[in-house]
Amino acid sequence: MTQTRREKLRDATREEIMSTAWKQIGEVGASGLSLRGIAREMGMTAPGLYRYYKDRDALVTALLINAFTSFTASLEAGRDTCMADDHTGRFRAMCKSYFQWAAQNPQRYALLFGTPIQGYLFAEELGPVAQRSFLVLQGVIGEAHVAGKINGELTALRLPTSLKSSYDTLKKFGMPYMGTVTQLALSAWSMIHGMTSLYLYNYLSGFLQNNVEAFIDFEIEKMVMILGLE
Image (cartoon, rainbow, N blue to C red; front, side, top):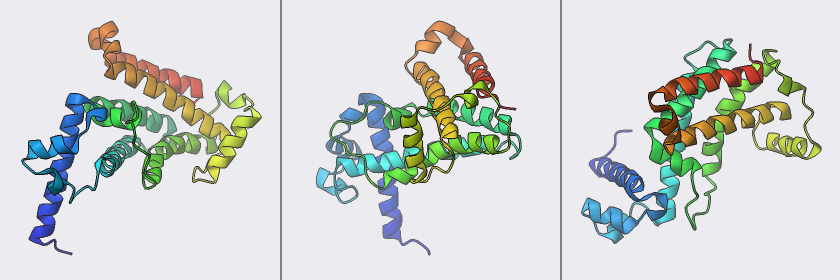
């Protein structure tokens, strides 16, 4: 359906609110997000802003959905640069996309995986959106596992009963693969997140100067070996 002029203006204002919010997060951090500050920068009144987002938490939820959607799309785009049967290539490309998206969107990455905003309660509608990004990673590893292309020593480890129970529960909430795959996916995510966070907090650059990219590529290759991807 064709949008009316009023609907277009409303959508444009919502976009401006979100872009101003991202700018504010970049300057003062997510914990300093202020609807009044956003309204002031946009030349609006605070009550006028509340017509678009009823409170700070509603805006935070919209920002999180925006960030998770962009993040997931980047992971999928990286994965899909390789053919479906190129499991190692898909894993490498997805990992690189993870790092590159974070490097290009540090405010968004910090909002997703950094210090929680005090007083903000995780909105119910965020669940499926947030889960999708992990399902991309789990899916790449899961498809390789099903194809018999993961033969690392980690696959021979016996999961503790408590972990196996947790992973069995997760299957009921839309994570389709066996516990071993979920363990491998979480392990890979931990490693990717760790080096990404070190980069965003300028530790890697301090140590490596212009060789950060080479370090990331080397670490991705190490993960390929640890997983036993073929």
